[in-house]
Length: 193
Length: 225
Image (cartoon, each protein chain N blue to C red):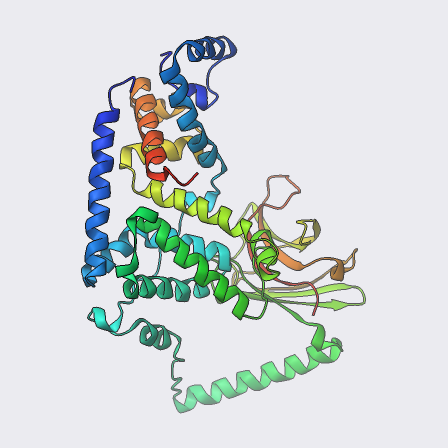
């Protein structure tokens, strides 16, 4: 818009959508390489979500395999109109995580999440976690130079001026890349608010 | 840069600059729309927990059988299949001696702790080494703690045992360091009823003078049988 970059970004997003559509089609045709690509793209986000929900890595590893096995088996049912592949995978992960929590004997987990889940009292905490990991997954798909600036600002709490000094980038470039990253995230998450 | 919304959204403008930006917002509908579109993204990024920025590496993908390799279920089963233990005769004798000694030691220990049924297991949290473990048991003079397999404490850090309630209420029971094998056995005072809490929680604390929980939990287990 103001800096004239929205057209370029829109094209980049359209290109990403096309790539996602192609990947979904290949998955539906049961192309093993598509499953590998899907895992490389989103495996980290689903695994992070599962580790956080289940509270232990070994259980998360098992459920992670279940999630991608299910994605492989149900690939032809994926509907891009209802959300992207990341959203779809995280929804599968959510369902399998709930199955796992309800199946097992209660054991130590982070009480901020799992206590409520074990009691089936409040799955909204699970949804909040899901949103966090959807955002983490989208951050991972940003161009590196934009993701790095957002990470510095929101994770390392550096100001834009500090980021400019640390990276050697002009302050104006820091600002424009940051806005570009925010716009890209907004577009990617559009329709999920 | 009045038309750049990032510094405004990130709260990095001084009051005069922020006021000028807000005046620009009133007169510029496009800018206003841009700010409103980006604001929820900023809010969500600000709320993103640390682990979402530092996501751990996922395990290798196990391809299903019809994707060209062994089935996922077979691979998971294979990963869980216990390894067969093969002992040479001398090693077997040495193991027997060690196990006998451990058994005698355990017997003595159990004899000093007449309610072994009240031993509570602590298990690793998150990415902590899965071989780390701990046990706590309630005694008349406090809580007996035994931990092993932890990261040895370096200078400027220590472990602290807490009681943690479902409402996130925390009571620190005491701090300690572990030996170079990551083990420690000690008794800590127990000023409150653990049944009023949900977990025993062991955290790794920096020696920074902050009495609060560091947020780095390493072991956790139920506070009552």
